[in-house]
Image (cartoon, rainbow, N blue to C red):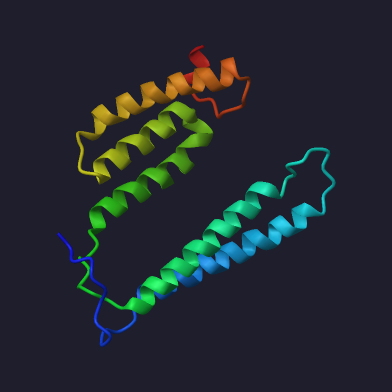
Length: 161
């Protein structure tokens, strides 16, 4: 269990957390500027198009401040190294879904994403998770495309219905 006491005054500031705080602040500024531009669009309701982007920008700004404060406390312990294989599996799932969507359709592409992410988190075998993910995504496709009349990319599996 980790010790909840703050680091001693002699510890160095955490540069990685400062980078994260800076990235969050930049993202908050970009979203805030876009929300400000959306506020100029006339709206016929009390909640206009700028409401949620403004809330998101405020939340990101608060996260940036919190990360900067934590970074000033310093590094308390050595961080573990990242494992590359899980990251590669998840990225392969995302890239595979992007590549497969136009011709394989929603169910197969998202089934691949499901299987690759499961493999990245240490679950296997890939084929079993692919089948489960494709079946689940097919049900989601039917609900969205047929029930809600939303357009999702159709592939050979979706053309069966």
